[in-house]
Length: 94
Image (tube, rainbow, N blue to C red; front, side, top):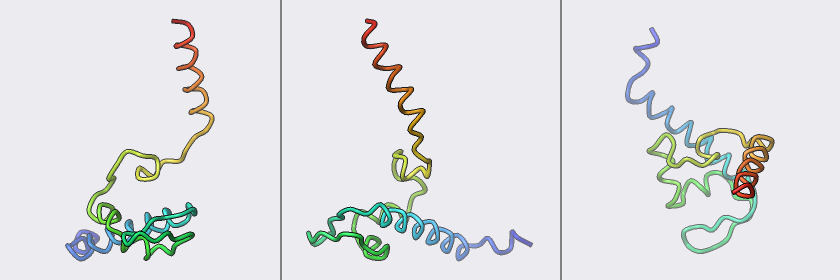
């Protein structure tokens, strides 16, 4: 029954759903975003970001890059601190 709903239209809707969630996530970061026409927008709405040229890649690909925002992984500060400390210790020992 579920297989009959998974057609081209269903995939298109799912792609838009993921794209919208990503744009909402980017908009929630706050700060300043530079639009295509050069103006700066503070705290933009998600559909203002969706109109930008750089947002096109988020419509067509699952994970356009390997950063923590695109992967959907949470930033773990404790793991990062331990890894950084390990690298510093290795550099000092040599």
